[in-house]
Image 1: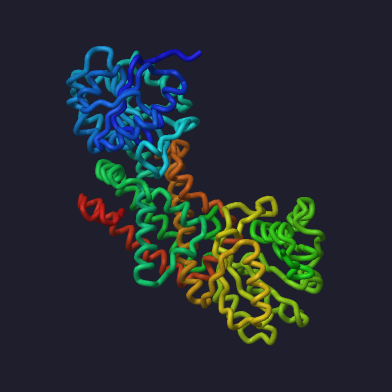
Image 2: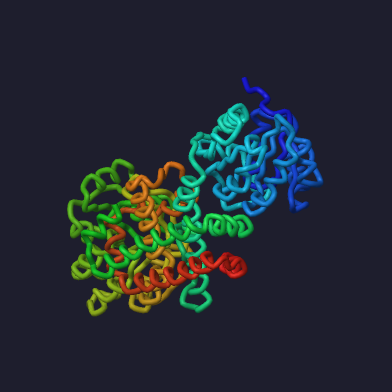
Amino acid sequence: MQTTLFKSVGIAGIGLIGGSLAKDLRTFGLVGRILGWNRTLSHAERALELGLVDETLPTLEALVDASELIVLATPVDILVKTLPAILDRLRPGQVVIDVGSTKQAIVEAVAQHPNRKQFVACHPMAGTEKSGPDAAVENLFRNRFTLLINPAESDPELLCRVSSMWSQVGAVLATMSAQEHDQTAALLSHMPHVLAYALLRTIKEAERNQALNARFAGGGLASMTRIAHSPISMWRPIFKQNKVALLDAIDTFIKHLSIFREVIAKDDDERLSELMK
Amino acid sequence: MQTTLFKSVGIAGIGLIGGSLAKDLRTFGLVGRILGWNRTLSHAERALELGLVDETLPTLEALVDASELIVLATPVDILVKTLPAILDRLRPGQVVIDVGSTKQAIVEAVAQHPNRKQFVACHPMAGTEKSGPDAAVENLFRNRFTLLINPAESDPELLCRVSSMWSQVGAVLATMSAQEHDQTAALLSHMPHVLAYALLRTIKEAERNQALNARFAGGGLASMTRIAHSPISMWRPIFKQNKVALLDAIDTFIKHLSIFREVIAKDDDERLSELMK
């Protein structure tokens, strides 16, 4: 039997992640009322139309005041800017989570905040290249990791309720430090996104120079450039906030790619086979 | 109404491409008997078990002698080695096609062959990372390009029948020179494969150094490394045969990636947005 974990949830940013979470929270009966706010008004209206939320609120402040659980699903630059003021407004018993892809900047931004314990930093490792309320899908988090970051900095009882929520929408939980998270995310997600963007750019430039007709591409290219269709407004701030680890990951990749290049240039079949294993 | 284009087809290499073509040729009633040969005997047996072929033959020579249309779906190093001897054996009216991913080496290998006109060089831009007869699927070629290479070097009537076959299994046809093909394939397929292998290598090394736990990866990494699970025996010879164009494509990619790196390092938001567009 499912139990209602939060009487009301307010979702700031009702796109792919926020909207998908709203769907599951409703399906599994984990929350009472679902409220929404979105910087882009048309997205808020669309979320209401799709039934993702019961009501939209005109400001982030109103959303915060009206919600027991506040889910911040905005781009990470906006997150870092808004979280301190959100924590300022909290009453006891309220809890804020984020779902951002970078963690050091956000935990540093609120490290000394008196209400720090009411914030749980989360990163569900799920998503697609789509965005906006229409991209919301059911079961997005099922069997995917949701990482809980610097868990000791959150109130244990609130942490338990947030963990329970993620578990009940099917996520597999793991904890790590913000630093470990950002290095992991740089290698597993942020750097691969840069590769996809750079690959798409390489192909587009060759097309522009009429060296190539990209319509001949097979499925491999599509699968390698899929994530380069993710929204710029979301990814540019991620690259910026995780710059140090990201540049390091790019350099590591270039080192490995250069080894492949050298081995191919030398016709070193044996070593090439080893590298491809 | 479909008509039988070839009384018998012999498929050398009954894996993903050869097996999928066999399925479609049968489904659409385009050929009479389907014969098979495979260097790996267990694959030939499995293809028979799956009903991909009506009969397997013990040698490539026996397959060639018994088939009106011969489809060579072996790795490209074996292709280049075997095609001249296959052309030696041909009787009038027989036609050989290949489905290899590189084209300059193969057309050069038979450029002066007296039976050159009985060979049509083909490259269906379709596939997955899977291999072997169990990877064969229906409609693999539907709505995907099949490139016909140096078409003027083939007998026009045989070229027409081969074109008709590809069209009837749903492929979209285009023609180009071997050189243009290899440059296009280097950029759209071979270089992206090297990136996928290098990315997988980067992640595996980080895991080995315990800097990372790759099980936290989301769908983006999976989609970018999918094609790195393609068989080495197929891809290593492709890299080798298309070395010049491939190294050039890798260098072009590294140039573009380095621009991204620099723009991220400099926090040049405006330029980064332009590059990501």
